Length: 251
Image 1 (tube, rainbow, N blue to C red):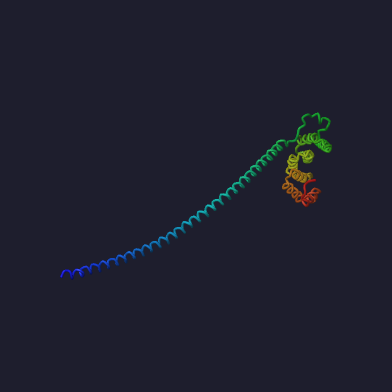
Image 2: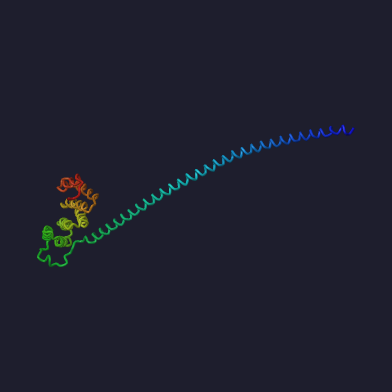
């Protein structure tokens, strides 16, 4: 009796084992699906992360390019500023040199006093005689001797009615010697001190020429314009108009 019953006893066990295997298979399949899903998610995240990293790299590359460009521009700018600074220093040095010369000219602008009165011993010591002697020597191009007579007049009687003319010929002596910087200062004395002098138009014109001959075209043009404006009917104004129209250097 036991032998007949025994096969039926193991049948439920086999059925349960089969069911368990199917259940495990389903669990495994579900796990596989989850793993696949997670794998796809990881791949997607990795792709996004790679894109972000690449974007960061691109941004860094652009920043490096910008930095290099800025550095290059800065080098050019600093180089240009250095050159401009060098030019400014040169201009300042040049201006200081010119100012130093002008100061020297001003210091030596006092009327010259004859070192020895013997050179004027035969000249009557009147203003008219001193002026005449100075002009005569100027016409002979004896500029140093001319300044002696003219300087003595200016020193003795600075308020003389002939002082403006004497001062003008002092300036003319320096112009004749081609010492134009000094002539500019001496003509300026006539222009600023003797405002009613008949020599003032000539002083303005000759000062403008002196500026032009030293290469200072700006001040030369300004003086020519002053002359035309203040003394439009003077012979010197007619010459100044021609200079302004021509705009050419002194011949």
